[in-house]
Image (cartoon, rainbow, N blue to C red; front, side, top):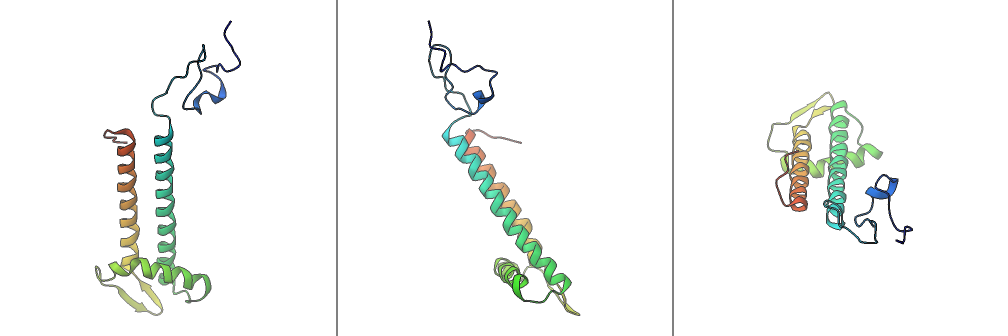
Length: 138
């Protein structure tokens, strides 16, 4: 008689969470697409998108604060300081609209948002290619 204490029912709730499910007879079978490397690349993809989201959020806040003429104090100062640091390499690409009554339109902030999003897309596609070993379109 087989030991049924370690046998998992394929319909059970936890059958998809393990990369080495135990089947009837105690044999362990490796499922494709599950394991340490794919899990690590999924975590890295999430970390990349989290970093992109944080940078884009702060740069967009910098864009909005400068556009509405916020005072450079407190939280707005921290956001504007970070935004200026990140966007400074792109300041010369487009002519900035000067201060018009305290309002400023900085195109370099928008360039940073677009380039950061594209960089995140490229990095995550490279991670997905490294994980699967083949081209993945979606």
